[in-house]
Amino acid sequence: MAPRVERGRQDDPVAAYKRLLRAYLDRRPSGTRLKIADAIGKHKSFVSQITNPAYPIPVPVRHLAAIMDICHFTKEERTAFLAAYRAAHPNQSHRLGAARPGGYRTLHIEVPLFDDPEVQHEIEDTIRQFARRIAALAQRGRD
Image (cartoon, rainbow, N blue to C red; front, side, top):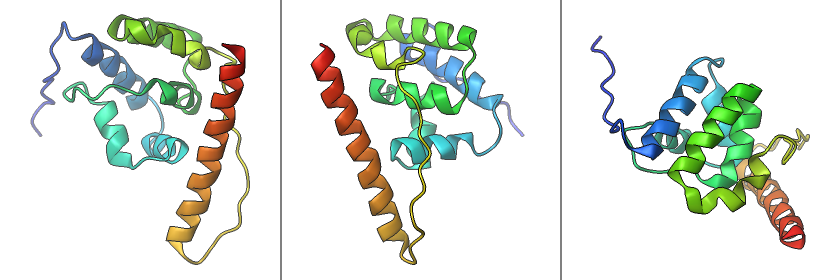
């Protein structure tokens, strides 16, 4: 097998934090990327793109808390990753409040199983969207 070629430029700040994220993910159990995809309501290929330094697609700030929670970042990992993220996106620093420890929490709720996978996905996605909207409204109240 050929070695992995790192296409993200070394001086690219987005590639820098994505390299950190990929390293942290590589140390987590298999299935972590799928858990992230489910939690943020995206396809696993989206998670692959936002964690690959070769792609310029940034990690959306709204997904940081969920990613760090699911991956169980250590305090050191969280600090290093957020510092690299801030360096890459200085204009987003004000939005990182939700990514701080204690900023968000992942809830696991039970929903009935439906025979139709499309219905199942639609219900779960609606619950995720509702939670995001409630959090955004609460955040607006604090700003």
